[in-house]
Length: 134
Image (tube, rainbow, N blue to C red; front, side, top):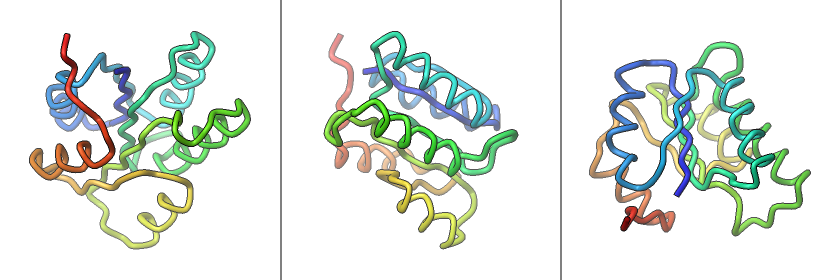
C-alpha cells in the first residue's frame, strides 16, 4: 500500500510514520501544496496513493483545500469511487465547520490530535486498510 502523510508538525509526522509504516510505503510532506504535488506525481507514475493523512492546519495550502484538490484530480482523471484514495483528516481543531467541510469534500474519516492509536487503527480497519504482509 502506498501512503502519503501530510503533516507540518514534526512530532505528529514521526508518530504517523511509525504507526502507518506497518501498512505500506509512507511518503512524508510538510504542507498542503506538497501533498497536492506528491499526489499529482503518483498519478503520473501510475501508482496513486491508497491512503492519505492530511493535517487540517498546514502552511501554504491547508488540508481541507488539499483534500478538495485531490478529489477534483481524481474526478478529472476518471478514477472510480472504489479506487479513490482513502483520506483521513487529522487536527487539533474540533470545530464543526472544518469537519463538515472536510466531509463535504470527500474525506473518509477524521482523527483528533493527539491521535489515539487504538481508535485510529480501528478507523483504518473500517476503511478496509490492512497491514502489509510483506
